[in-house]
Length: 468
Ligand code: GLN
Figure 1 (cartoon, rainbow, N blue to C red):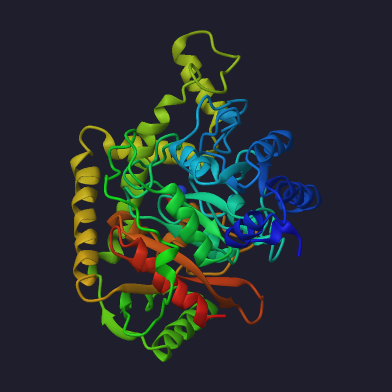
Figure 2: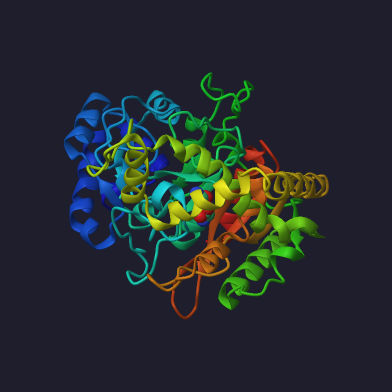
């Protein structure tokens, strides 16, 4: 076994015993990167000298690949956008500082949809990423580079971000474990903002235990992010001991199963997952989240509205690309943006500006906020009756590059992940099997209440055990 194939826990054990050093792991990752990146395109940039120097300075640390919208001092942070080409971060995001304080080092920058807008990584302005299980297919998105790097053993584990599904859907497509923490669990300071009321950073790993270890390192209070509470972060990995399905009440929501467009193989694998949980002692509880049908519409008002405000800072003055063609300040703004942003980002800014404009604000943004509250209440109510929900993660397995041309069809990828994002609860994607014809990985989604990561990870661990 090559060292790049190790998970976090195995790497930590070998490092502790002195079987190898952090440099040995990084060298193995670099060898895999050099052999595979031309084909898979998981990494956008990889400063190998810097990674080796960090490993030498921290010889017991575990390297982690970082999605290219999280700031790491001295490294590029492009958000896969042409507008940020050449930008170098002046500081570490809190998640990076927390990682470093807990025995991890950042190692390489992985690809994504531009500013995290998309579900296939095809919106990257800087490169193509392919699914390691079938190179003609997408890795999912927006954290597609993270998922492909984990799935292809081009890293030990990776950081992703999730606004409406961007950790969970690519994890499902590339056979990884992906955890979207509850809103507020992990600091967003130093993470380029897409939709500030939804964004969360989370682990993308080779096992549930690894996700528990990495999430514990990332999470906690941060003075720089007022959404992070002060209460201590549980030791997620320690609480996995003895995880079992016995007596776990699993909610089966009809809104997630009777859905047009749910791929029959995904349905088969999810049904089988439900059956296994029951056999392992879980109690299945039929439930309903009646406002689910509005989640997509609500998300595509709120997320673009917040994005249009957040992306206003990219105007050619302070960060990244500045149009050479500009003669005055107005053309400097418009030309820099026109040249720097890709089509999906422009579409979101236009939609967001529209729903916030005077005369439309109440009808769109104000109403969407009220429906968001109803969606959140559905979850509050359901979690009074069950421990977790089990749902399909994405409606289909990985699709072909170029297959989904229409933006609306692309948006439908997040049908099952968006409601929990709007509710701010925590959710994971855990590998559940492979399609019988195309042999593509499929994950299921497990959702728990707000700040119930400990329970989420225990149930995910129990699920991982029974799906081996
Ligand atoms: N695919 C969704 C979107 O395009 C979610 C993206 C995300 O979670 N960052 O907005």
